[in-house]
Image (cartoon, rainbow, N blue to C red):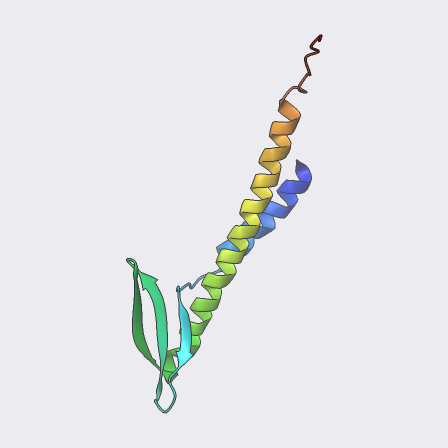
Length: 101
């Protein structure tokens, strides 16, 4: 169990260090001075235009969200493995009944 804990705490610490997050993705608009920011909200694809001078902080937030989701996936995997191990250690070995034919 100690080994799993050693993996979980760094994941949580990395998640805690992410200060900005934004869902979606950024696309450059050809021939225009701005970018497209697309994100799903309330079941719809919402699009907003972002001026080029605001791109860097928004890209950092989008990257932060993607990193958070990857860390959350890794965290869930560690918890699932730990839960399975605990269940296997707590459950008694199944016994086969002998049937006479």
